[in-house]
Length: 331
Image: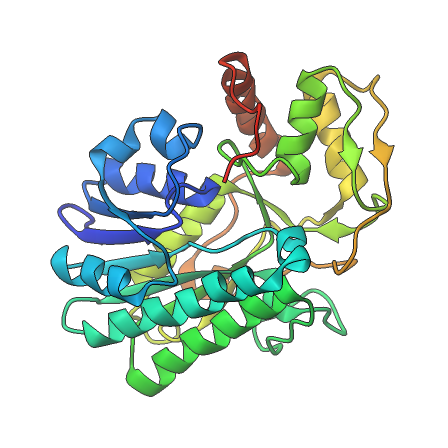
């Protein structure tokens, strides 16, 4: 698929995946339109200057008119819906804004795409393994139901069901990408294990583990996620891809304490023993994905091991922290 001169709308463009997706799309010659709610100069989208190479629509997912105007006036061909409230603990403290952004925001966007079906030829919805909820068996496969129970998980389950209803009822060219825990340079949510641990070690502090350290997850490098989203867009109208959900995982789950130790080794700070708080609530103990469908139908596999991904991630944070970034939590 040729991305040159294609008009692409990216929600969540200031987030970790959005910033690297925008970078890749610009490099491939696309005209990128970014939805930006808050201006944060620390984000990779801004720091890299990619925001100056994009068109910016300021607004919120909760505002249908903003989304409809963006798609119509910029004659959008391809939509990547990455925008969301992405933090489990934030959703737990106050679920309403998460439901508004993640659920209302998604159906607003999908409805705007339906209204402008003459323009929009493909829609990729960024989801999560959290959409499956606390499944009775692992790994998760795509034939398992969306079954979230806690607020953040429910917001992702609802988004997936709504997205696929637009595909099956209105023939909207929608695909859904379900990933595990995404890491890489540009993640400014310091409560997450990778950026939080890197920053603590950089400051000579013991890393904080909010859980008991035994929770297991898929950890997938951001560049592999960008590959996945582009593959879905490029194959999104194919039989067996359109209207389907896909899991994306390196299929090498690790515990929280294991990824903390891996970061310590990579940074040469094994002397700083982690502080284990064992205080998390409303989080699922074990979650990991089966990516057979993505391999078979899209030809996608993760290109980076955990150590390879961390080897690219940690230098980004070192540069960022040396420049004075990271003093306050990002959006």
